[in-house]
Length: 301
Image (cartoon, rainbow, N blue to C red; front, side):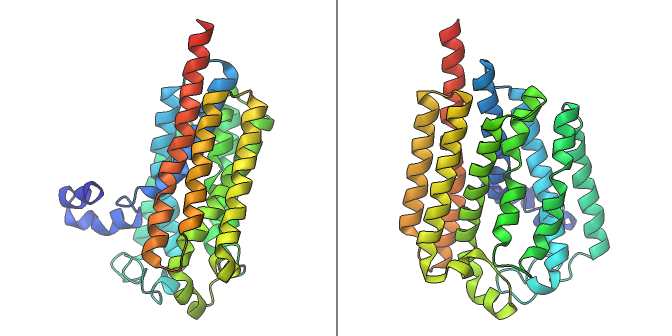
C-alpha cells in the first residue's frame, strides 16, 4: 500500500517516530485539513476570487505536522492506558520502543513546522491559530472524566473552519463561525463511529466515549450529529452567498453521511471503514465549493 511505502524508504530507526506521527494513516491529517480548505474556499466565494492555492498548500503542510504532534502528545498522555488496550498496546510509547523524553523532542520538531506555517499568515490568523491550543492540550485527558471527549476533539479539529476565512480576510464573520460548528458536529459524529472499535476495551479501562454514551442508540446519535453538521454548514453557505454548486457539494456530503448512518453496526472493521470514508465526504463538500468559486469568477469575466 502507498501509505506503507514510507516505512520501506525511511531508515528503520525512524519507524517508531513515523508511527507516533501516524504518517502511515493519512486519514487523520485529511480530516484536519478539510475544514481549513472548506473555510478558505468559502472565503474565496465571498470575496469573488479563485481558490488561493498557496493557502491550501500551507494548510496541508500544517495539518500533517500538527496532526503528528497531536498524535504524539496523545500517546504520551495515554501510554499507560494504551498498554491495556488490544488495538493500541503495540504503539511506540506503550510498548517502550520510544522514551517519553524522545517523544517530547519529536513533538517540538513537528510543532516548529506548524509554527513556520502559522507565522506565514496575517497577525489575526496567527493569534487565532494559537488560541486553539487549549483544546488540543486538554483533549487527551477528557476521556478520563467525560463520555464526550469527542466534543473537545471536535472543537480542536474543526478550528480550520475559522482559519481559512481568517487567513483570507484577517477577521471573522458569521459564515465561518457557522461553518466551524458544522465541522464540530461532523467531527463528533465520525469520531463516535471510530470509537465503536474500542467500546469493550474502554469499558474495562473506565474510559468514556460518545460510542459508549449512545450505546444501542448509536445510529440515532450519529445521525443527529451529522444532521446538525449539515444544517450549520448549509447556514454558513447561505450567510456567505454561496450558490448552486456549493449546495450540490453539500447535498453529496449529506448523502454520504446518511449512507454512513445506515451502515453503522457493532463491527470494528465496519466502523474503521466508515470512519475513513469521511475523507471522501469532506472532499465532496470541498469540490462543490471549489467549482462554485471558479464559476463565480467566470461569470464576472
